[in-house]
Every structure is written in C-alpha cells, then in structure tokens.
Figure 1 (cartoon, rainbow, N blue to C red):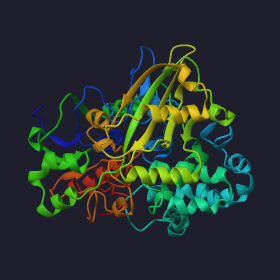
Figure 2 (figure 1 turned 180 degrees about the horizontal axis):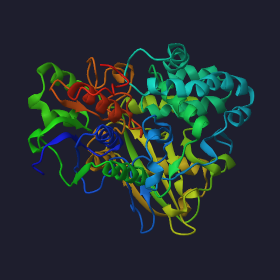
Figure 3 (figure 1 turned 30 degrees about the horizontal axis):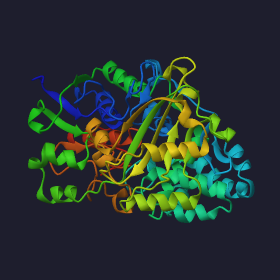
Length: 483
C-alpha cells in the first residue's frame, strides 16, 4: 500500500463506496479508494458467465433507484458513457391462464389496465408520484424530522403497513398480485410492518422515469462512477482485501463499505464493547439463489405484456407470494418460489450475440442455503412461458455461499446488507445518534447496512461521507441529516 498520507480512505467500491469517495473528493480532499478484487463495482459487475459473447449482470440488473437517486442525479455520468435504456413496461406480473398485470411508465396507462381497481390505484399512487421530488431526500435518509412533514406523512401512512394489508386495499387479483410482487423486493415476510414501503417506492420510480437498465451491463454504472472519481483527482487501488485497519495508510478518516460482520473482523479491536455487542446482534435476512441463462431466442411468455417488460415478477397470486415468502423466512424451500426475472437483451443487443438472448433471475431462500433451486426457478418460468427450457443453451448458478464468496457483503446470500424490517429500518446497524458513525473516532460505515438500506442509489455512502465531512473536517457543507 502507498505510504503517503490521505485525508480519507474508502474501503469497498460498491455503489455506496463509490458515492462516499466521490462526495469526499468533491469537497477537495485527497481520497484513496481500495477494492479487494481486481474489478471495481461491488454488486455492479457484468461478466460472460455462461458462454462467450453473453454478458450477464452478476448481481444488480435493473436500476430505477440509480436513475432516481438524489445524489447520482447530480453527477455527469453520461459524460463517461453511461446510457440507460428504458423498456416500455417497467414490470409485468403474469397469472395462470395467460393474463398479466403490468406497470407501465405512465401511471394513467397502468391504472387503466387494472379494471375495477383503476381508481384505487390512482388514488394511492398519484399524490405520491407528484410529491416524490419533495420527499426523496427524506425517504432515502436516516430517521430525522422531514423537510416536508405533510407530504412525508402522506407517504409514510401506507408505507408503514404490512404489504399483506395494503394489497387487500385492491379488489381484483391483478392489482393485488402486482403490488405483492413489488413488495416482495423487501425480502421478508409480507406480514411485516413497512413491507409496503419498497413496493410504493418502486411504483413511484416506475411512474417518474421507468425501470431502466444500463447499456452494456450494470458494470457501466460502476465504470462511470469510477471515471468521475478519477477525474476529480481520486486514487484507486485494487487487489487489496482489507482484513485489518493496520493495512491502511494514515488518513484522518476511514469509511468502510462493509456490513457489521466484516466491520467486527476489520476494526473490532478499536470499537467499544457496547458497539461490538450491538453489531453482533445485527440480523441478516433471506438469501438468494441466482440463475443466468444464455438463450437461443427470447423467453416465450404467453402474456404479451411480459414480452415488453424488462422485469418480470413470477409468483402468481397475492396469496401464493405471501405464503411463499413466509415459508422461506421460516427456513423452508418452497416448490413455487417468488422469482424476480430480468430480460435485458430484449432492449440491449450488446448483451448477447446477434439473434441470441440472456435472462437473469433469482428466488429467495433461507439465509445460508446450499439447496440448488435451478429446477424450481425454471419451472416457474415454464409455468408462464411454455417452451422456455427448450431455448436454454447455457446456464450459470450462484447459491448463497457462492454469492457471499463473490461479495462478502452478501452474508448468507443476503443482498440487502441485513434484514430491513421495523426492528432494523431505523437502527441499522446500531442504535446511535448517527448510524454512520462507529464508536471509533474517524471511522464510519457507509454500506447498505446503514440507512436507507439496499439498492443501487449510493445514498448510504453519500450520507456517511457528509457525516465525516461534518465531524472530521468541519466543512460548511452539512449533511442532510444532522447527527
């Protein structure tokens, strides 16, 4: 490692580590970004996993929160080649019998296709979509008094509800199943409080900008962020896996894009006993089992809406999704899991050779599961797209252990950096005045184990960096949240 002094060192180059590094570098500091792997990006990586010429996103694939991120929106990422492609249907939700509900980029179009639930959908989503610019910084932040309390309360009232309750607001299976699939992104039982929040945020994002995918793969987002960081004067070191603070060069502050498990391993000796105790009590959620396919033709979904969508939620009815997520959280492997599928090559021809296609999917499994869910996932696809298996010409899988080996932040296959239930939504990773400060002076946590949690938005890193700037450097650019 270099011996020169830095103002700040950031460990980990996922979207939050990159956001933290950029924020610090923008403030005029000298910043070193360290990544353990040879490639930068964390969950923002793309590789030829199945066959030559087939480019697969290793973790994140569709990016509504990246486009809608209050911080990323301030960066000139298009200048570095980042281009988003937006499918006409953000997400489709097929049912047995060949029908499907769909989230179009237009709220009006979405509502119009929901039959008897048209007005209910409008009444729920229209005010939230309109108020999102005023509340985005409050939603994607730690607990604090909001700048727009009335509009925030309008969002918070339905967001606090269990999705199992909010889905019953609708009358027909289409809207009920559609919202249950959105809420299943919370990766927890839909009977839990606040599980409606992620469903609402994703629907708002769809109606404000769609659910885009980056041309060339998710790696393109990381590449643009890294290029901007370097253009600002930042320094990058790869191939150094940090296991102890002793490995780092001297700096006034250190920000770690890791979860509590790794924080204890890297810096446990410098943390207070109480803080260590809180970190050891931190809970990780369900894991994922992931499959990537190389295909010789598009997936033959029966419902036409699915053939226009970048994302497909395969779970059937509201009741089926609720039961499956509850059973998985209890440690069971269900025969018909909720499957989240993306078909990027329909809209981005750079993902596969001419005439060929890729598909990306995962289902939720108990944390640490080693059970192969390939057959169950493919059966769910076949259920709504008869003939799918005949189009597979290559396959690659990740179980939870392989996901964690690829990225240590995915503890037990948990891609959210810890369960986002009511017990950890506002106190992740520990109950403190600022969730980004550790008990060691100058040491901060900037991963998805801090608010607002998982997703490619960079806001965890942004808020952590602002806190460090406020605490260590007394710079006038105060954080959005004053800890």
